[in-house]
Image (cartoon, rainbow, N blue to C red; front, side):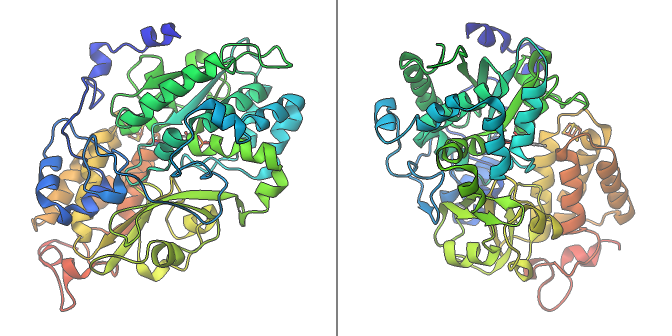
Length: 504
Ligand SMILES: Cc1cc2nc3c(=O)[nH]c(=O)nc-3n(C[C@H](O)[C@H](O)[C@H](O)COP(=O)(O)O)c2cc1C
Ligand code: SF4
């Protein structure tokens, strides 16, 4: 275990990549998009946040934004269908004895009685898809790692929860750490991994303390670091804390970070299921994805597959930001419409008129009120240019103009580029500058804007650059009036300063 901490040292070349290479960020306020959406509620805090160095995104307190490091107000939690949130919000389940008395560990016992193929078959038949953003079928990924022939394999838990606006993983980590540890043990048995790592964002200080304590309890209890009951397989799990980088949530950048390298995105192939951490087959799964596993094994794949809608099975956690009347964490079945999320769960906005909602991730387009009847489901969201993503739901009121939002998204996006691809490294910075100019009403070059966006779309290795391009294409060209324009930008009576001063 110590070996990884040794590997995870920061050389000069890697330290410069991170915002929080030299912790702590005590006193810093959050610059995340959910806090941006709520900036008029605490203008001074936001103004301090947006000029803070290093920047801080995001502390997972989006339900009470604008937030700051160290805020830990209790999160309102509601489960319409409790698969994942059985312990979350009710004071948490942080003692392994209590967890076991409540039925914890039964899924592991059952998993240990199954043949590997039967165990993976449960995950395949459940229809579970990755909750980290891409929605990749989890069972297929497990099968690929299980099939890989190698002397060592690794399991990596992506607990980086970098998408501003999402705090679901934080709650699972803080309130149900043994569910995650149990899930990791099941996954490790299924794919044949003897060692695993939880890569946790540094901004989640409480989760770090809770996880360390939970891992120690699991070791003392014989769950970790010992042969598992009835089988020869032994598995250990180590917590590694990130140093402040949105990009480290991307799985190949994360693996480079774990290896102590500069966390640039890797070119694929090879897929990480074949050559991942230190060149060995690696299973990377998100926290929420893994936390569904014990329920699936206990209740059966068919029970899980009976929940949901279309090709999106099971439940999803949603994080609603502070602009809603009822912000907080919700668990819903897939298939609920965006309107039900906004109006029934969130209770609508507590002030202003809804300009749109950003669902899933910061670069997913802004969904206008006219599309709120879309069901929350991977394919349906994709069809309208949105995403299920990480389940963050950020409402924007009409006190944010599209131009302001565009400038903010590009400021964030340019700052987080890993720099591997030229259109992303240089293009996103130039687009950030142009969108800041457009926000200030300065005339810009529409053809140049569009050329840069097209280069970003075509020449980006990972979802970050492509996401920025999609965001620009779908939401707004600051140099052309769009039907999607808000009243603050153009006003009901006509063209805004931006539309009037820029070229078409
Ligand atoms: C720029 C970028 C940032 C990402 N950030 C996260 C993150 O913070 N947490 C996460 O679980 N997945 C994140 N992902 C997705 C991961 O690369 C990966 O798909 C995921 O961890 C796989 O787990 P899953 O199959 O369980 O979703 C990100 C992807 C990109 C392109
Ligand atoms: S698109 Fe951007 S973030 Fe992604 S690999 Fe290229 S430079 Fe890095």
